[in-house]
Image (cartoon, rainbow, N blue to C red):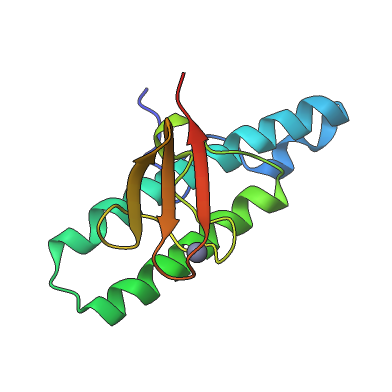
Length: 129
Ligand SMILES: [Zn+2]
């Protein structure tokens, strides 16, 4: 028998309440995994969505701020972190979603990648090995 089709926002098969009877550590790990899944899905959605429409710059900026905030809230509540493609996509200071040439400037300076948020001017330096 085929599994029932789940709605988009319900990416995992079980709700967090399902893990209530398991050990604390195991439950936390499971819930964290679900949180990362949802945050990853939201990130990919945030990147793909505005290209389907002609948003004005103000609307785009508000959109990136709103979705960055949503992703940050999911991650913070579950003490989770995003994986490699979306690792540096949220500003640490204003929680805006960072997309090159839209809300993010990328430069290389003294052997380091420099990410500058165009909304609040927060700078993040990442070393290259
Ligand atoms: Zn910022």
